[in-house]
Length: 113
Image (cartoon, rainbow, N blue to C red; front, side):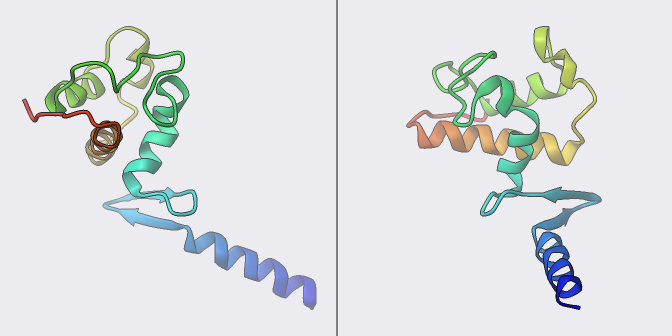
């Protein structure tokens, strides 16, 4: 009986870390925002945790606009073509929001146009 209660407790805790936006369900790391979660699932491997680059370009040192970031996500070129069609509209907006937030934290402006 004790094992059943422990397993049930773990299932409940796991369910509490999932939430919905529109018709998408995101399972987040503790304390992660929806925007951070989308970035972590789709961008972090190439652009790094803080956007400073890994196998992909540094998103902090380049001059970028919000419109340019969104355009690259919607119409990817080069190595980013692997993401083509993978992100829904809600996820694109969340990913853009997180890149803008990472840039803000690094002291970089990201104008709309």
